[in-house]
Length: 177
Image (cartoon, helix red, strand yellow):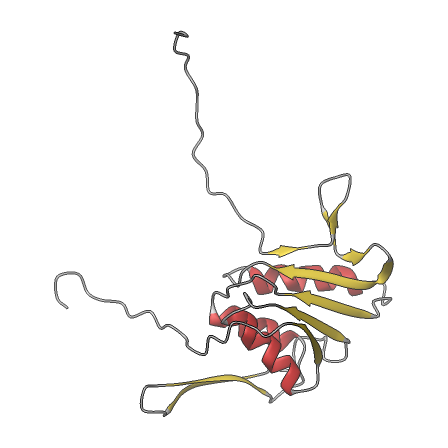
């Protein structure tokens, strides 16, 4: 048997990217432009988390700084969703003000929340395509449907998962509820 040896492990928070590009460059950074046509942007949203809209905003700012971006592909294939707020913020990037992004209803059918676009996103004229598949669910479907409803994006792929529910976190007081 081999002699045991000591290993030092550093514990750290690992930040997982939620926005991916087309391919990685030699420096390890994502290239968010299609290699065959560098005027077309490509972003893959792996999940809708707390930082996803912020990450996408940074990528879009970088892609549009030279004003040569002809269009954007948003890929939500195999994206099971995530935070409703992230879906709302991402949709808002591409809409004029006053558009209903999504509304939620309670079990009795009463509207509980209604989310409207602010028009502050700055990409309301950018041509869009959204790629979906059978595993695109929840927040992915909200973004795709919203952008399709306002003729902001062409949807390409297969029928999505069809998850029409939103979970709401309810905080419970320890030992009193």
